[in-house]
Length: 333
Image (cartoon, rainbow, N blue to C red):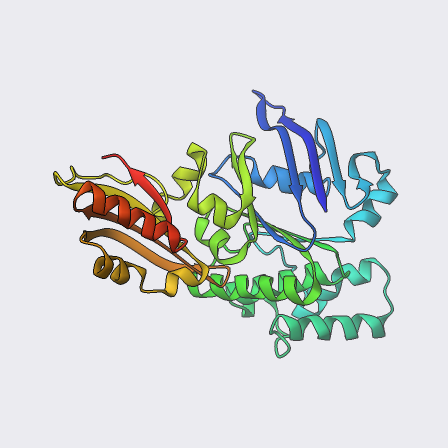
């Protein structure tokens, strides 16, 4: 488990920049944990505080049972070997082959050559690059370069994988393949993955939990499904606007109408609940917008509808929806 207690960080320069302010955050072991926010929110600084690439001005950073702030240089180097890091711009050594890039941290640790080869071949197979070991970075696509970066981060068998915007330089198809790889690594190796991103779609696809950062503070944190369906902070609502979970410009309802937002989770998203509602109750359902998608492999749907009918029938329809485990939110125009 990773625990940040009242962590703050200010950068000095022509003017002070308060990057983090009073961060309290718990990242459970074994999860893919997302940290999301707009540019300048403090995401990367927070990530780099975990492995002490950025040392906080105040507060405590615990990784497992180790207080990272208290470590001496030699102890810190040993602790960092248990934390791999994946960078946005790959940071590969262009003069070295794929094999040599993956092997680099093992060479620094003076690992025997035979053990290096075995480990590199295992990792190359894991990330799908077994046929590229003699290639150079210039011969690889962006997605392949990031896979090399992930394999290199795993070379020392870390317990935590820190990922700083690992898909922001990639096209959508390649992004999906890299995210699938991170999920495979999380499940197969049991690693805790901390994933920094500015894209809610990445969080939706990959993460178990998420913390929303804005101006250096945690605005809210919790399971992804909870944040997506009930965003409390303005920062989360802004990030979710493109995913139908935040503000929507509503027209005026008809005299007998009301606007409601319906949220379907898990198997509810695959059930014909709306058609059953219309058959059983004398109401009209006008669907204004909707989305059915996957949230970490589980169906997730949201509908914005106008419900028309008598007050009695509308109340009965709302009860029917709640009885069928559909989350209902009544909206005002």
